[in-house]
Image (cartoon, rainbow, N blue to C red; front, side, top):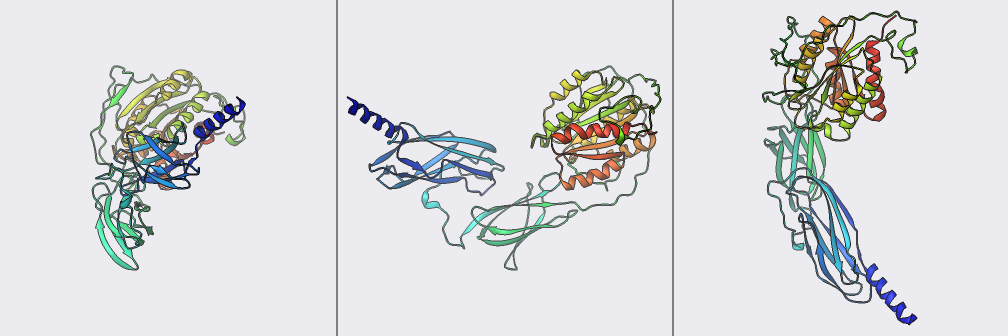
Length: 491
């Protein structure tokens, strides 16, 4: 009886564990662009002394397969080719269960990756083994070249691309409306140079083959020097209208722009708002109790004796680009930390912007922390970036609670450029700083060096700072430091 039990145990163990092994059980395709290889070949080997069979393949709808055979003789192998569906943009994480006759349990293969760009004619079926790229180094294959603006990441149409191999010009091509060129070339080492009017030339070089067949070239706009804009007359306050808890201002679609300090001033288009003017509050100036500098004060001090009352208007970027790399989380963390130190005499207004500008909070006391935090926690990202229009609205809100005794400051929190909306924001920033002393600062959430250089020039118009936030520590400290710096009472 014990011998029979032992045999049954060994047989069960053999069936569960199996004797067929996969060459690998996971494959990451990475970022996929047109012409990229979207399939992987996985070899399965029979390590037993018995013949076994491929029984079935249980796969998701967006995975296709073929196999080189179904019978595995002792010490032999078969190949299963698995292909993902590259006709659907976005990340994928697929599991494929493959059953063999040696085991009750499947061998699970995981495929991951991200389809960044869908090809114009994607192949949905799995290619046959006979369709493998030939080994001849002169075999021609398709490549994709994309030219983009390094600041906005938008494609640049009608940019010229030169293709050079062995010091010989192979061709001269122009990008389409999506900033893309599709060509068929032999394998080899190439030099690619892209140019476009109003941009600095840039190049890419390297060996191109079936696996490396996507090339992205970024073009930068050169730095400009700007003549100071002519100041215009003071813009009167808009008439008061009934209060509306949430204001959405529809904006007419305009050509996308980046921050270009050479743009000529445009006439400010006044957008009617339903914002009630907050009654002016007379602030009694307390006597300064000591002569310590800001650097000498402990971090815990934020009192009336050392810091003015604040009139802070936040402009929060909730465009789609803020949805990546934890940027929106850092924005929320920065706001939450600042709210925790606000005093009852501090006044807070908050607007958000993507393709529309929305007023979230109007003239709340710093004592109303719970309501402010609730509104910030509800933020979600969407659409493009109407930063220029948001700045215009923010200054009109700031002026409604303006007081010369306060620290009046507008703070924009963003990850980059304003690619939609009014172009007259630079004039608005400079005029309000010169006439009323309203400071303009920018908090850059994980911005690139190129964006940072432009933002430094923007905040220079408003007497503020450009503040880099790249991690949680920055989020918890840097906005608070800016508020303390600008509201500190000089001795």
